[in-house]
Image (cartoon, rainbow, N blue to C red; front, side, top):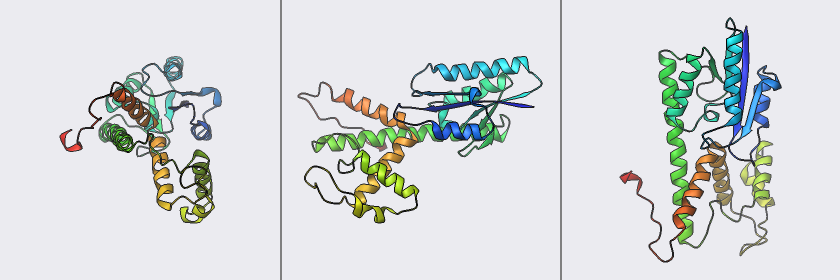
Length: 245
């Protein structure tokens, strides 16, 4: 008999957990066995995550004949780097628990032996690399914008309301080219005009980046703000060249 404990997480209060919760519930996990929280993986103590792990261990201790499965929607909901993800997988195995992911490259039950362990370590390292690349590119974008007297990442002509409209209509099957004529810039030098298709695609790319690893973007903004403090007067912030890293 299988007993599943579910865990759902997003990094910021502005994000929603409904899609993860629905996926876990649709996988047959009762709502009272799904633990969720809105907290960044940069926070070392995640109360609901710890509670989910503790519950899984207790269930296994009381029902050793059952297979207790710790289920998450995807790998990045578990930890912030390859070392942490690998340590967590080893912790679950050591306590007789099974790890399961509903989406991503390792969808299904995680096999802690042989090729399964190697694949998990590989994709954990890839996830960490992607997070660092997003953080680095965000910092570079912020630095470039600051040099031009601008602040923030997404093109200012695309407001949150406009982006929401684009996302909703694209989900309904429309293309960016079909949506663009209906969008009106509400302020600034181009007030009353339509945003360019390129601006919309840039905004969508930034949105996808924030959705993929919001904690990386959040950390980049925090790092940039910290570096800018005390920059009066003084040399402009210059990020290291990628080739030198």
